[in-house]
Image: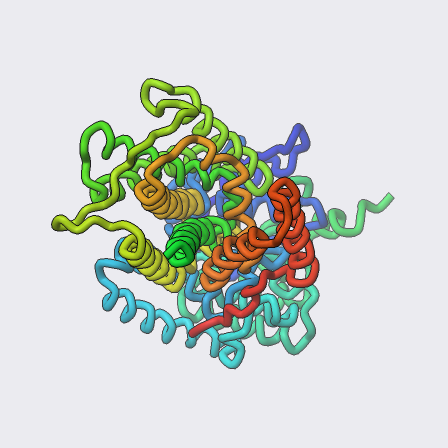
Length: 251
Length: 293
């Protein structure tokens, strides 16, 4: 298992957001995390990436315990993410947004003064690499544009490209196709399949049923802070409990 | 001769403020740290270098570096607790720091001589050559160039890109593996170091320092320089510093009694600031920094 969530719990000021959530994601799997609004999906993402700390339970990545690590430490272990509300660096260019995803020597202050030539070479090779990711999402023409000047759909693509540029093994996407037009949705679908082909593992939150049934290997359904069903798209479609969570119980 | 000496004096002040403004631009404009305590680093540099020269006979050149380093250490000490704060809270934290340093300069009389100040700070000497007047002007501008080079290099480097990312969205930066606190502390330390250097240059030029040169008002002046020039612009910091020092000068020569003149200067000066900020909110030099790559 690449990612294991065990009896995870988190409350905010007495309100229980996650109440004993258990699930696991296998290597090279596309897994969807679904559930009604307020089910605790984004909180689970925030717990995995260290933005909030769990009260109880364990998060294991490649067998290593993530509890208590800082977001930047977790990122360095190979987990990248996007946000439900896009979080780019608006005042930086598209290319700069991607370059930031790379961990490199040039980000150490002193190296820029002691090894300027090495840093320049490193920067050029990073630009080449990032250009490939930009081509993949079709934004190479926009590379010198400020991120804030992109359209909503392009910003979503850029955020995904940025997560890809970290070359993380596990990529968490928080509603990758929410508010995106059908053409863009197909593009994002292709990108996710591409990532799987490259050996990456994807865990994503999404409400678009058609989209997630199409691409997922596994679906994890959450309600009231815990997982209520885990299975293939077919299994989930036929699960009574899931229908109740979404539509309410029959009287 | 009098006019020449006056011009040299003004240009030396402009140079010292350019260093201060560039240093603040690095922390405030590029990293987003609203530091109201900038003047404290300036004061620490000035007093460290002056006290070393007066009490221990340490030459200017070492005093300058030690002044910068001591300011930088204080910068790190200030940054560790305050960089967790944001925006207004950080501003208040740094304001408190500036007041503490001012009180120390004012009240630790056995060390700083309190409000009476430190007279007789020696001029720099290199191989028997004494820097004074025009040669001091050249010396200051050598340091202006060095500061410019350092800040420019930092801002254009991948390290500087992380600073800008931390300013734009700290959370996104940390989810890309950057430790925002580490970067803010380094930015604070470098900014404080450069301000300390400016303090030392000031002390050895003016030869007499007292706490009144290092009040919060001085911080506000430097912040105004950075904002009027343009936040996040190197040219802006230079321009803002020169502009705010030079604009005060012509008013001095109006044929009015000095009691009126002082008040008038303040009024024209603050009026100009308000007008500029209404019509040029991005600063006179801002909004020009095109993206690269």
